[in-house]
Image: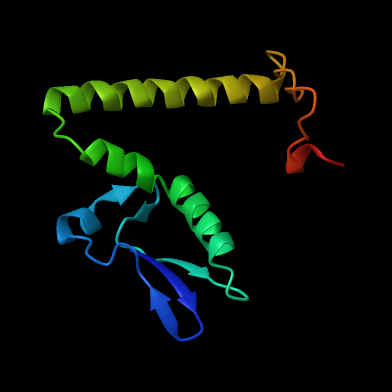
Length: 122
């Protein structure tokens, strides 16, 4: 469940989450866990931006997209197997980079007129 708090008031955009949906796990957390976002200085736009970012990190949008239509068990197995292969390849690639077996990828340079990402600015 998601909640935006403003002082004592709480705004819950998805208050009607069903029990079957709440029991499903996504990554390390459950969908039933509450994501709290504090509204500061009545700035709802900033709070919604932060909420969207949190939901993206938790995988809620991906879960909603997967649940929008029925997925056959055979399709689910194929998808989960492909996800596991991708995770294993990513882990092996990161381990190889860390151990110096392969070169790290070159950092992407922004296009002309675009600013650098916040983590790259120093």
